[in-house]
Image (cartoon, rainbow, N blue to C red; front, side, top):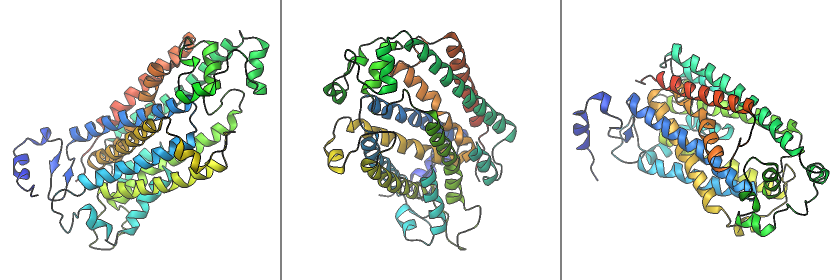
Length: 399
């Protein structure tokens, strides 16, 4: 199909009104407005998929099963983007289509993209310099500062809310308290296995924020949280934070080759091709790790097997949805970053803004908490909003 007639029509539109422009190769986001739209959608998607996974975990589904399902649709999202936006139109020697790039000698860029998928803010600063400072530093770095403040406030919110929950649990009997330390089952409050499988236990009927709600939720969820040391959680979080800060700069290098690793005459990877390789490495790592965790689980989770995973259809549709949301969210983030600078696209790191909203709306989080917790929560959300606004306002235009 010949789409060449679309380009003259788009050229009649003012530059400020063109959100998606057409080239001989593919759809390309060029305007700042288009990039901001992509980033806002990415923020929504990337803030929603963790809430979906939390829903399944609170219903008792093993996270290994959920992440195996999620990995499939996360890769499928990248394939869909590559075969549509990356393949429509006629390619050129300097802007080849997706299938053409698969056979070219672009392995240095491919490895950067796959490294980004493996490691999935330091990253924002790196992107600023990699992008030849196309973002406005006077707006960008105050936005980064707001992010740091919001993250610190988030830690205070968590600590304050944990203290609130501890006070609520003090009202319980010694038998109930012993449940958390000795891992014994409460006679009256335990949720039956059938309720866990159907996701319809009494925790959904209890008043959110009460001590009874917390106990019943603990009985139902797959990852037990009460009475556990925070050291392991902090170590995992720290490692994840390092990885999260590096994947976007790695993707930036894959698409723009700032270190000149490609041979002369080899075109840069398009954002769609790079995203495909990025997602392939995510898929491979995710599958390998979660198959290992089936047989050698961590965090005291029960053992499982491939057979058990394949037969576990409880919540599979939700897990597939989470993979699609994350896949398309990452794709939109990279598309927006390629147009306006990856440092500005790091605005989607404010995904706790969306996740907290879903947590309050769906899971009843922070219900019946203290005034101190509410003040910290509002302050955190406000700083995230300011940070997102500043990072998006710093958007530049890649030549």
